[in-house]
Length: 255
Image (tube, rainbow, N blue to C red):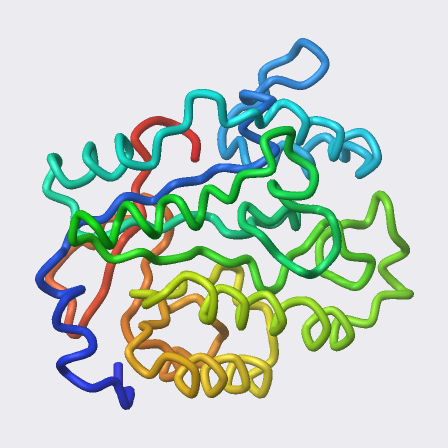
């Protein structure tokens, strides 16, 4: 993989080798169960798997009380395990922001009962303990936005204007993450079904704001835009791979 990443920018990642990937959102409140039945695998897809109406799904944000959330404890656990960075799902496919965004009220701060910003708390705790703070951001799928990809049960797919979502929400929120939470070690994109031009626009914006912020291999089909390669979920290579790469692995059978 060829890219223009400065060797010093990726050195911390090469040395860290091991990070904590936190999937956390409204889907967490459902605990993999819908209408009394367990939904097997990838619990963060529970809304799409069951075509849960947005008007129903969003009400579960009230259950994200954060009453037992302690950022210092989370970071300490990661550090004690030998991890060098934390990746938080700032926004997964459901479109719900787990940070304080100016874009609408569909966020943990606006819709959650605590009105706390867990992303800020984690970022502060990570810096204090010498870990890199990083963010996952679903840039293509967004089941809350009428123009985002993926939600065909609430919205007419034929009426979607993806460019409107990409320019109006996606770029806006990525910029927020890069300007409100200090140094961001990397941005972890997923389902890279954006155009090559859109992928390049995202990369250029990221590098302009934070030149040292790394970009994973799922930003779009053009892997040269990434700073390192991302294998499939739980994928273990059969042999030695060239270049910089990672594989995201679950602790159980779902994220």
